[in-house]
Length: 351
Image 1 (cartoon, rainbow, N blue to C red):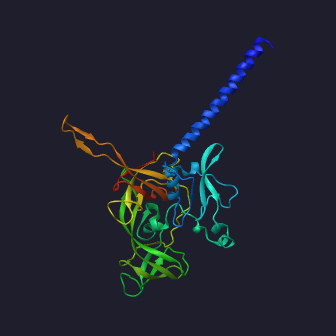
Image 2: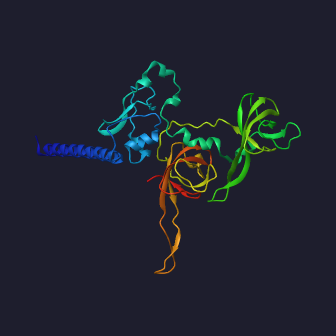
């Protein structure tokens, strides 16, 4: 073999060795990053319990639950592999040299013939339905462009100017059929975006609910309950609000910088499992399942030594997960709160 060929072969071998080393280092880097995301006390296996949520399970395995999509391994041998059921055994496994969480043993509940006809609501959800029941029953924010499209009370049967439980009202703008239920809301205060002072929507004040007894224009509806009197112009929204509860918690795919502009229930201080409204929506890239950090703006204090004033650094105060989005607003459930949160606190991508 000539000296030049021997040199080229040695160089080729060195290049291959260097490439293998680089690839191995990349794999080790990816592995170390995934391992670093594991909770310090992450179990090798975990048996899913009734009442668990995906957030709870993710927090069992991970320091930051929003990394769940990156570590969850979809088992192709499992029917509906994204769904997790009580009794399933989840375990840490190695897939292509990287640690992943997957279903290592399915529950007998899920595999039994009777369970095949069980609604998917029996699967573990991302957040608890009870946690967002306040959103469904006590408050709503109506987007600016949505108000005019909602059905409204045009008149009350009899000589009543106002209506309460047991009264009959007539509604325009509805194509509902007998038996359909609606919540009645009064259009309350305006919601103004604190960043640009534009009108985002309105606070909806729950009045009561009713059931349609006769279709047509106007539609006839009987009020079945009331918290205060309904009047002409009050609006109707469907009693059943569709909330998808099976989704992965994840970091937003785009950079989100917004603020909390309202809290469902009218309280001033916000804690864990309360529902908040943000001035960011699908137009800003916000999506269901996105996890955001809540930050409190540092106050400005006087510097009594050197004079003048200085702003205290912003402090992270909590974490929320988005469960409903519209064009310009999003609803989030506070998952963690290290201190009381407030309207106008900032929401940002988690770090």
